[in-house]
Image (cartoon, rainbow, N blue to C red; front, side, top):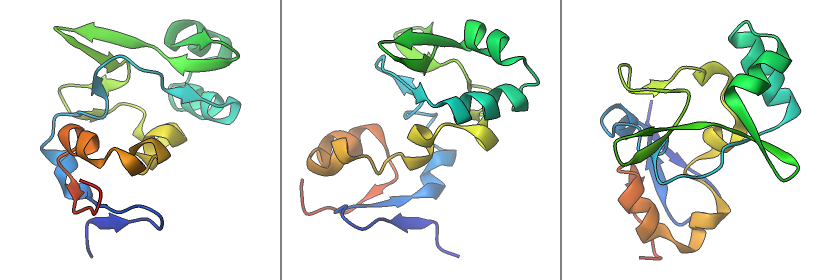
Amino acid sequence: MSSVVRKDGFSYAFDTSACYTCEGRCCTGESGYIYVTKNEIEAISKLLDLDIRDFVNEYLFKKGYKYSIKEIKYNDSHECIFYDREINGCMVYEARPSQCITFPFWDYYKEKVAELKQECPGIIGSNND
């Protein structure tokens, strides 16, 4: 079974096997927002066996009318609070937000493939760089 994923409308492909070696670049680096929906909040809080209010207070912050997962500062990096350096992965992987599931196939990167390649070593080919 191939570890290469392709999506219609994107000029590049993604080799998922690169995730094992990249040290979570998509979960670390520049500060940003990891938005979560009501359903995602419920799923993550259930996975963590937390009351929804406790989960929201401990792990989320409000940005406008949306909720985003908090980050922690590690050296010069900002990391998703659920990124675990020891396992080089996500502590809530089974319930991770759709924003995480769909990476690297975000509309933002359709015209910024060179930028994406700097962030993600699993990006293969492109007619845009």
